[in-house]
Length: 176
Image 1 (cartoon, helix red, strand yellow):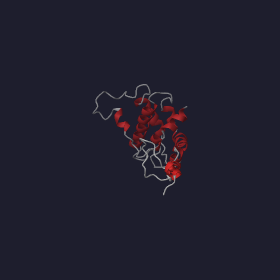
Image 2: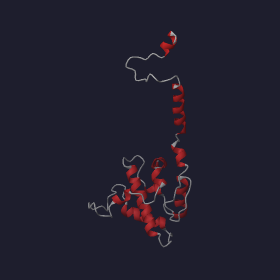
Image 3: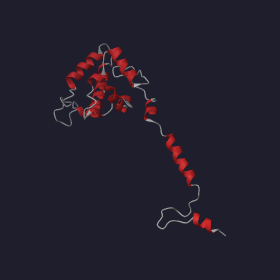
């Protein structure tokens, strides 16, 4: 027969949402939740698994860090992505960065199919100067939603799993 102390230990508060079949292993359940929490990876751990493909290099070369890929574009092709991205304090930094990166990727893809990468950085910069104005991203958009020359086409990634697009926060930090 249960003692008075046993009865007090298992007594429920009126209107309690605790199931009367609960046992004293609640602490074990809490430990399990903490174990699951510990398994959650930090964003920086995930970035370590990304492959960064330089903007101006259609060969498929990849780097383990954003800075290395940006450095490759600058050293090999004279193209500095950070110089064409909007200010980090801009209200539409992310939107503009997505459009800019995809516009760059499309231009490089379209203009290096024959393997001609000579002056691709310079040609890309000229293309962006003519078609991607930081103040007016829609300079070529005549308002016709069906027109493929509008900026809407650049909201869809050109490169599948583009690490540049996945790490826009890092690009923003580099702009500061």
